[in-house]
Image (cartoon, rainbow, N blue to C red):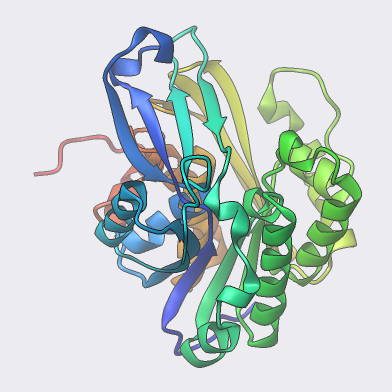
Length: 357
């Protein structure tokens, strides 16, 4: 697995941008009248690790023309150091297009998180390959890694084709492809065979495959670990066996990764990870982490993993930095981590929470 040299962008992510609103102080949505609003998407959560640490990133998306929410999102992306490119779509009246709303109760203690996605009229569902110059992006400008998410791949027939064509173009120009399967049952309803075929083709040209047992089983038809049992550490061997089966089915990929999570309560999790890089296994045994808001932890893991690959580190550090980036993300009220530098993340890995003056 070799990174393309002399690229304008280290990382490119296609996404559907929206906003996330959360009550203050970990309160339930129905009991609150004050909310924090942030721009959000799973894919920009991933890219945030690289952008905050100084690597050039680009977002491929679409906006509602003249929308104050679109302006809010653009300002946020610029503040996070991300370039963006995307078509401006006419709203089409009060019942036309808009950016998605994610309404989240982060939970507390024994009260679990609850997330409501309000995606009616979502402008991101119109993402179309004809609106982007792939020869310019991948051929002339150059991209180190294209990161694709199953959330965008399954959002609509247009976005499914969009992700597939991006993967084909990236492969043509020597860009590495990362694919986080991110299965969502409601997105797949009525499109199971169509999406299975598209996801299988994307996976077949990917260099990095990421997913949990449900993702690999329901997206690609690869048998996952046996259900049952609460001790996630005891299931590591069965997760390894699942990854071996994925590798047999998709031998073109070089890196396979999955996270491990056991929830003790909302604010205390056991967090681990498994990665196969080439023929070498790397395992982070589940360790206890303290959680402010769990949403975005998995994206943080992927973001840290990709950053470490982009930096050319040895593979052992890929999973360590990914694990720590995911753990860091759960300490933020935003659903993405905002690392000040690499040392912040390595301190999480080292278990060093001492004051730094």
